Image (cartoon, rainbow, N blue to C red):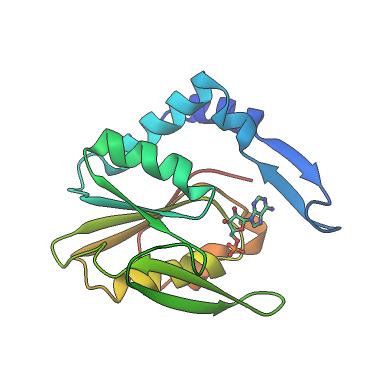
Length: 177
Ligand code: AMP
């Protein structure tokens, strides 16, 4: 990974104070996705990490994880699998509920989307507390693939989201705020 190039990507991420609620500094990655140079740098950086790991499926977390996830899957020659909010996937699903700051949330995946032969990367745009990705990890892990990696475009260091994952999980992020 080229740190100078990734610094350029970081510099075009837009910060929106107090969105969606007061006190949150929202990292808006749409300004990085719309920049062709930044998009190419992100794609190359992801390939640098996962290009030699035998990945067969990339799982993207709804909705912002679909963008980088689909790009990574295609560049790896792997398949793409969406992890969605309840009621969106049309075929048989398995689901996982998890606690959020207020109430609970649920993620669903098609039951036949991952097989024991798969090597999986789960991708989302941003790691905050880690609650969403931990649920995604446990859901995918329950389908018994050979290996599950976890990846983000960026993470918020102050929230220590990496600490929620078991130590054996390889968690990567292209840059940190
Ligand atoms: P968490 O479960 O706390 O790690 O939250 C992760 C999810 O919420 C990701 O899908 C992010 O896209 C989104 N998210 C949480 N906090 C932020 C933030 N400050 N800026 C942008 N996205 C965020």
